[in-house]
Amino acid sequence: MSSKKKLLQEWIFPKALESGCFGENASVESFTIDKSRQTEGQFASEVIFVGVNIKETCKNEIRKYDLVIKIQLQNEKFRNAVNLSMQFENEMLMYDTLLPMLDINGIVEEMFCRYYCGYVDPDDPKKDFIILEDLKNDGYRVSIEKIFLDYEHCSLVMKQLGKFHALTYMKKQNCLSELLSFTKKIQDKWTKEFLSNSQLMFLLCAKRGIQPLIDRGESVDLLKSLLNEFNDVVEFYGNLVRPVEPEAVLCHGDFNRNNVLFKYDEHLHPIGLKIIDLQTPRYSSPVIDLSFFLLMNTTHTLRKEHLIDLLDIYKQSLLSSVSNICIVPELDFGRAAIYGYIHSSFFLPVMLVGNPIDEVSTEDAHKIAILFSQLGGERETEALVNIIKDLLQFGYIRNSYKQSH
Image 1 (cartoon, helix red, strand yellow):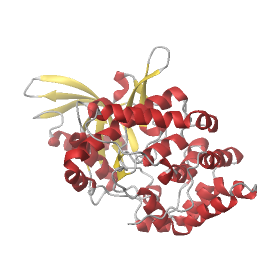
Image 2 (image 1 turned 90 degrees about the vertical axis):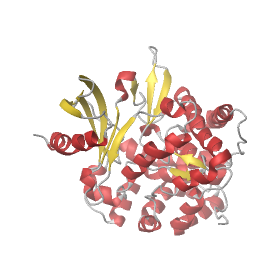
Image 3 (image 1 turned 90 degrees about the horizontal axis):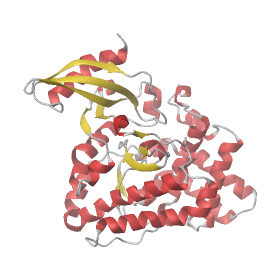
Image 4 (image 1 turned 45 degrees about the horizontal axis):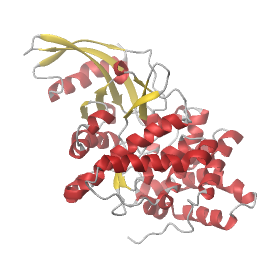
């Protein structure tokens, strides 16, 4: 018996049945693991695709469920190195509490897959799991494009993200204190200790796209000032993500092409979208989600031609979603746009080169910093340089990122 089959049979399914998510007095008649399906771009968990037949005693019938079951990464050194331990708790909080609290007119059901149950063991991460609906039968899949999305895909993403963020503004209208009380339960993997330990990685990865422009004599003072921010990455990062009212919303927190699924029509045009992987939510500026997606998953050419258009599509979707229920503040994209570059600086080379997780056989922060900052070659470096060039062109890099607390 394979280790995953044993885990399902002896631990995950018994705990799931105990939760009642498949009905009262239910039992597993049989299940199969679909080994032919491989996850793509998943770095925070491992995924098992399972078809399971559940017998519901009270109804005397057997139902087939197609499930996606997430478990912790088996690479313990990488898991510890990037501080993944609490993310399953965050995802359960999102599905159990935050999304139902925000939902209006079924928008959450439209935008997210069904959640069955989850479990986190405080002493043994190998027992952690999340059970979700497998959307394959509804036609959802990862994007055809592997990294960079075209305008049509990005437009759909901006429309859906606007709808999602609108839910927070409507909730804040009458229940701000309730919302804040629950968002305080979100655990942040980017702790001060983790940021401090990862400072070299942040600096070296960020420098990869900034230093070539300084060497070419472009915006030297401004870019040197930006690099200086990384001398205290704890304060720098904290200033970027600190919620500023009335702009702040519940963000996905890791919003990029890997964490959305598309539905296509017969001509391969995207017509539907589902948001997945809610492990790093954050109550912060909408720019946290916008900047990561738009800098990570678009080309230099598309940004030059359509970045402003895409931000306007987001804005119009958000405004139409709130329908005069509440006032939506003007978005200061430049205040936190560099957030998207910071994360792209180490994640975009990973995606362009391929998954380096298997190469991580150490928890040494210095070795990990070197590994991530040197992935790939000229292509990966130029992709990061182009992001900085675009941020400069649109005026989205600031002289200072300090904020009053």
